[in-house]
Length: 270
Image 1 (cartoon, rainbow, N blue to C red):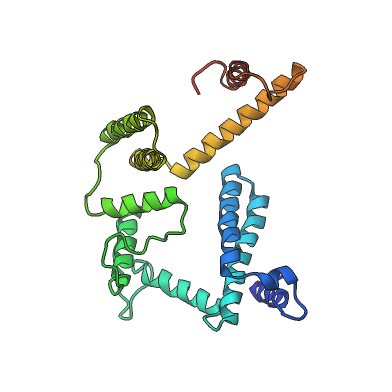
Image 2 (image 1 turned 135 degrees about the horizontal axis):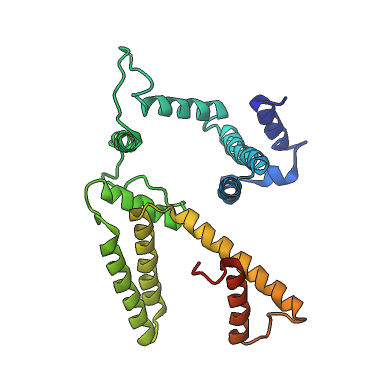
Protein backbone atom coordinates (compact mmCIF):
# COMPACT_ATOMS: atom_id res chain seq x y z
CA UNK A 1 0.00 0.00 0.00
CA UNK A 2 1.27 3.48 -0.86
CA UNK A 3 2.18 5.84 1.95
CA UNK A 4 2.90 9.54 2.24
CA UNK A 5 6.52 9.09 1.10
CA UNK A 6 5.27 7.60 -2.16
CA UNK A 7 2.95 10.55 -2.67
CA UNK A 8 5.81 12.97 -2.04
CA UNK A 9 7.96 11.07 -4.55
CA UNK A 10 5.21 11.22 -7.19
CA UNK A 11 4.75 14.94 -6.64
CA UNK A 12 8.48 15.58 -6.98
CA UNK A 13 8.49 13.60 -10.23
CA UNK A 14 5.52 15.55 -11.60
CA UNK A 15 7.35 18.80 -10.85
CA UNK A 16 10.60 17.67 -12.47
CA UNK A 17 11.53 20.39 -14.96
CA UNK A 18 12.91 17.93 -17.52
CA UNK A 19 10.86 14.76 -17.17
CA UNK A 20 7.75 15.89 -15.29
CA UNK A 21 4.25 16.92 -16.36
CA UNK A 22 4.14 20.27 -18.23
CA UNK A 23 0.93 21.28 -16.45
CA UNK A 24 2.27 20.53 -12.97
CA UNK A 25 5.57 22.25 -13.76
CA UNK A 26 3.71 25.39 -14.88
CA UNK A 27 1.79 25.82 -11.62
CA UNK A 28 2.55 28.15 -8.73
CA UNK A 29 0.92 28.91 -5.35
CA UNK A 30 -1.60 31.32 -6.85
CA UNK A 31 -2.69 29.00 -9.66
CA UNK A 32 -3.13 26.04 -7.30
CA UNK A 33 -4.98 27.94 -4.54
CA UNK A 34 -8.41 27.81 -6.27
CA UNK A 35 -8.11 24.03 -6.61
CA UNK A 36 -7.30 23.78 -2.90
CA UNK A 37 -10.49 25.63 -2.03
CA UNK A 38 -12.51 23.56 -4.51
CA UNK A 39 -11.22 20.28 -3.08
CA UNK A 40 -12.14 21.36 0.46
CA UNK A 41 -15.70 21.99 -0.72
CA UNK A 42 -15.80 18.62 -2.44
CA UNK A 43 -14.81 16.98 0.86
CA UNK A 44 -17.70 18.81 2.54
CA UNK A 45 -20.07 17.70 -0.21
CA UNK A 46 -19.09 14.04 0.19
CA UNK A 47 -19.67 14.31 3.94
CA UNK A 48 -23.02 15.98 3.37
CA UNK A 49 -24.07 13.11 1.07
CA UNK A 50 -22.76 10.45 3.45
CA UNK A 51 -20.71 8.96 0.60
CA UNK A 52 -17.64 7.40 2.20
CA UNK A 53 -16.18 6.15 -1.07
CA UNK A 54 -16.28 9.69 -2.43
CA UNK A 55 -14.99 11.03 0.88
CA UNK A 56 -11.95 8.77 0.66
CA UNK A 57 -11.20 10.03 -2.84
CA UNK A 58 -11.85 13.68 -2.02
CA UNK A 59 -9.63 13.55 1.06
CA UNK A 60 -6.89 12.19 -1.19
CA UNK A 61 -7.40 15.09 -3.57
CA UNK A 62 -7.23 17.52 -0.66
CA UNK A 63 -4.07 15.86 0.65
CA UNK A 64 -2.55 16.27 -2.81
CA UNK A 65 -3.13 20.01 -2.53
CA UNK A 66 -1.15 20.13 0.73
CA UNK A 67 1.65 18.09 -0.85
CA UNK A 68 1.63 20.30 -3.96
CA UNK A 69 1.97 23.52 -1.95
CA UNK A 70 4.66 21.97 0.22
CA UNK A 71 6.59 20.91 -2.88
CA UNK A 72 6.41 24.43 -4.30
CA UNK A 73 7.69 25.78 -0.98
CA UNK A 74 10.52 23.26 -0.87
CA UNK A 75 11.61 24.25 -4.37
CA UNK A 76 11.61 27.87 -3.23
CA UNK A 77 13.72 26.99 -0.18
CA UNK A 78 10.96 28.10 2.20
CA UNK A 79 9.95 24.89 4.00
CA UNK A 80 9.27 21.20 3.39
CA UNK A 81 6.34 18.85 3.88
CA UNK A 82 8.08 17.57 7.02
CA UNK A 83 8.10 21.15 8.35
CA UNK A 84 4.34 21.37 7.72
CA UNK A 85 3.76 18.17 9.69
CA UNK A 86 6.07 19.27 12.51
CA UNK A 87 4.32 22.65 12.75
CA UNK A 88 0.82 21.21 13.01
CA UNK A 89 1.93 18.55 15.51
CA UNK A 90 3.50 21.25 17.70
CA UNK A 91 0.40 23.43 17.40
CA UNK A 92 -1.97 20.61 18.36
CA UNK A 93 0.08 19.74 21.43
CA UNK A 94 0.46 23.39 22.40
CA UNK A 95 -3.25 24.14 22.08
CA UNK A 96 -4.38 21.03 23.97
CA UNK A 97 -2.74 21.38 27.38
CA UNK A 98 -5.66 19.39 28.84
CA UNK A 99 -4.57 16.36 26.78
CA UNK A 100 -0.78 16.72 26.54
CA UNK A 101 1.04 17.47 29.81
CA UNK A 102 3.59 20.26 30.09
CA UNK A 103 7.29 19.74 30.85
CA UNK A 104 6.45 19.16 34.53
CA UNK A 105 3.80 16.59 33.66
CA UNK A 106 0.87 18.88 34.55
CA UNK A 107 -2.45 18.82 32.69
CA UNK A 108 -4.89 21.72 32.54
CA UNK A 109 -8.56 21.01 33.16
CA UNK A 110 -11.28 21.76 30.62
CA UNK A 111 -14.95 21.27 31.43
CA UNK A 112 -16.52 20.69 28.01
CA UNK A 113 -16.27 21.34 24.28
CA UNK A 114 -17.41 24.96 24.64
CA UNK A 115 -14.73 25.62 27.24
CA UNK A 116 -12.14 24.05 24.96
CA UNK A 117 -13.25 26.28 22.07
CA UNK A 118 -12.76 29.34 24.29
CA UNK A 119 -9.37 28.06 25.42
CA UNK A 120 -8.34 27.41 21.80
CA UNK A 121 -9.19 31.00 20.87
CA UNK A 122 -7.25 32.24 23.91
CA UNK A 123 -4.22 30.25 22.76
CA UNK A 124 -4.52 31.78 19.31
CA UNK A 125 -4.70 35.30 20.78
CA UNK A 126 -1.55 34.70 22.82
CA UNK A 127 0.23 33.41 19.73
CA UNK A 128 -0.79 36.56 17.85
CA UNK A 129 0.34 38.84 20.67
CA UNK A 130 3.59 39.68 18.89
CA UNK A 131 1.92 40.55 15.58
CA UNK A 132 1.97 44.11 14.26
CA UNK A 133 -1.84 44.24 14.21
CA UNK A 134 -3.13 44.42 17.81
CA UNK A 135 -6.82 44.19 16.85
CA UNK A 136 -9.03 41.40 18.19
CA UNK A 137 -9.91 40.80 14.54
CA UNK A 138 -6.30 40.28 13.46
CA UNK A 139 -5.40 37.06 11.69
CA UNK A 140 -8.76 36.29 10.08
CA UNK A 141 -7.72 35.28 6.55
CA UNK A 142 -8.98 37.40 3.69
CA UNK A 143 -8.95 34.42 1.33
CA UNK A 144 -11.86 32.74 3.11
CA UNK A 145 -15.31 32.59 1.50
CA UNK A 146 -16.87 35.86 2.59
CA UNK A 147 -19.71 34.19 4.52
CA UNK A 148 -17.12 32.30 6.57
CA UNK A 149 -15.07 35.43 7.15
CA UNK A 150 -18.25 37.18 8.32
CA UNK A 151 -18.87 34.35 10.77
CA UNK A 152 -15.33 34.52 12.15
CA UNK A 153 -15.50 38.31 12.51
CA UNK A 154 -18.77 37.99 14.42
CA UNK A 155 -17.41 35.28 16.70
CA UNK A 156 -14.32 37.33 17.52
CA UNK A 157 -16.46 40.36 18.40
CA UNK A 158 -18.82 38.16 20.42
CA UNK A 159 -15.89 36.87 22.48
CA UNK A 160 -15.77 40.23 24.30
CA UNK A 161 -19.54 40.63 24.53
CA UNK A 162 -20.18 42.67 21.37
CA UNK A 163 -23.11 40.52 20.32
CA UNK A 164 -26.85 40.07 20.46
CA UNK A 165 -28.00 37.71 23.18
CA UNK A 166 -30.85 36.12 21.19
CA UNK A 167 -32.21 35.90 17.64
CA UNK A 168 -35.10 38.36 18.13
CA UNK A 169 -33.08 41.58 17.75
CA UNK A 170 -31.30 40.07 14.75
CA UNK A 171 -34.65 39.57 13.02
CA UNK A 172 -35.43 43.23 13.73
CA UNK A 173 -32.06 44.23 12.27
CA UNK A 174 -32.68 42.04 9.23
CA UNK A 175 -36.03 43.77 8.66
CA UNK A 176 -34.29 47.14 9.00
CA UNK A 177 -31.62 46.21 6.45
CA UNK A 178 -34.23 44.87 4.01
CA UNK A 179 -36.13 48.14 4.32
CA UNK A 180 -32.94 49.99 3.40
CA UNK A 181 -32.56 47.81 0.31
CA UNK A 182 -36.14 48.65 -0.66
CA UNK A 183 -35.39 52.34 -0.16
CA UNK A 184 -32.35 52.16 -2.40
CA UNK A 185 -34.33 50.38 -5.11
CA UNK A 186 -37.09 53.01 -4.86
CA UNK A 187 -34.52 55.80 -5.10
CA UNK A 188 -33.06 54.50 -8.33
CA UNK A 189 -30.66 51.84 -7.03
CA UNK A 190 -27.23 53.42 -7.11
CA UNK A 191 -25.08 50.30 -7.67
CA UNK A 192 -22.51 51.08 -4.98
CA UNK A 193 -25.12 51.89 -2.34
CA UNK A 194 -27.27 48.91 -3.29
CA UNK A 195 -24.25 46.62 -3.01
CA UNK A 196 -23.56 48.06 0.43
CA UNK A 197 -27.12 47.51 1.64
CA UNK A 198 -27.40 43.98 0.25
CA UNK A 199 -24.06 43.22 1.89
CA UNK A 200 -25.55 44.29 5.21
CA UNK A 201 -28.50 41.92 4.66
CA UNK A 202 -26.15 39.01 3.99
CA UNK A 203 -23.97 39.85 6.99
CA UNK A 204 -27.01 39.91 9.27
CA UNK A 205 -28.15 36.62 7.72
CA UNK A 206 -24.91 35.01 8.85
CA UNK A 207 -25.48 36.47 12.32
CA UNK A 208 -29.01 35.04 12.43
CA UNK A 209 -27.75 31.57 11.53
CA UNK A 210 -25.02 31.80 14.16
CA UNK A 211 -27.36 32.86 16.97
CA UNK A 212 -29.89 30.16 16.12
CA UNK A 213 -27.20 27.48 16.08
CA UNK A 214 -27.55 26.84 12.36
CA UNK A 215 -24.55 26.12 10.15
CA UNK A 216 -24.82 28.85 7.49
CA UNK A 217 -22.90 26.78 4.94
CA UNK A 218 -25.01 23.67 5.55
CA UNK A 219 -28.22 25.69 5.35
CA UNK A 220 -27.16 27.26 2.05
CA UNK A 221 -26.07 23.88 0.65
CA UNK A 222 -29.47 22.48 1.59
CA UNK A 223 -31.25 25.42 -0.06
CA UNK A 224 -29.13 24.97 -3.20
CA UNK A 225 -29.88 21.24 -3.27
CA UNK A 226 -33.59 21.90 -2.83
CA UNK A 227 -33.64 24.44 -5.65
CA UNK A 228 -31.69 22.14 -7.96
CA UNK A 229 -33.90 19.16 -7.14
CA UNK A 230 -37.11 21.06 -7.79
CA UNK A 231 -35.84 22.81 -10.91
CA UNK A 232 -34.76 19.48 -12.41
CA UNK A 233 -38.24 18.14 -11.64
CA UNK A 234 -39.75 21.18 -13.38
CA UNK A 235 -37.76 20.27 -16.47
CA UNK A 236 -38.98 16.67 -16.28
CA UNK A 237 -42.61 17.75 -15.90
CA UNK A 238 -42.32 20.10 -18.85
CA UNK A 239 -40.73 17.36 -20.95
CA UNK A 240 -43.58 15.01 -20.02
CA UNK A 241 -45.97 17.66 -21.35
CA UNK A 242 -44.01 17.72 -24.61
CA UNK A 243 -42.48 21.13 -23.99
CA UNK A 244 -39.57 22.93 -22.32
CA UNK A 245 -39.27 25.67 -19.73
CA UNK A 246 -37.28 27.94 -22.02
CA UNK A 247 -39.34 30.72 -23.54
CA UNK A 248 -42.35 30.19 -21.29
CA UNK A 249 -43.67 33.17 -19.33
CA UNK A 250 -42.85 33.25 -15.64
CA UNK A 251 -46.43 32.37 -14.66
CA UNK A 252 -46.23 29.06 -16.53
CA UNK A 253 -42.78 28.32 -15.13
CA UNK A 254 -44.13 29.04 -11.64
CA UNK A 255 -46.91 26.54 -12.26
CA UNK A 256 -44.31 23.84 -12.92
CA UNK A 257 -42.40 24.93 -9.82
CA UNK A 258 -45.53 24.60 -7.72
CA UNK A 259 -46.24 21.13 -9.14
CA UNK A 260 -42.68 20.02 -8.30
CA UNK A 261 -42.96 21.54 -4.83
CA UNK A 262 -46.32 19.89 -4.17
CA UNK A 263 -44.98 16.50 -5.25
CA UNK A 264 -42.08 16.87 -2.83
CA UNK A 265 -43.94 18.24 0.16
CA UNK A 266 -47.43 16.85 -0.33
CA UNK A 267 -48.69 20.40 -0.19
CA UNK A 268 -47.13 21.10 3.21
CA UNK A 269 -44.96 24.15 3.70
CA UNK A 270 -41.34 23.09 2.96
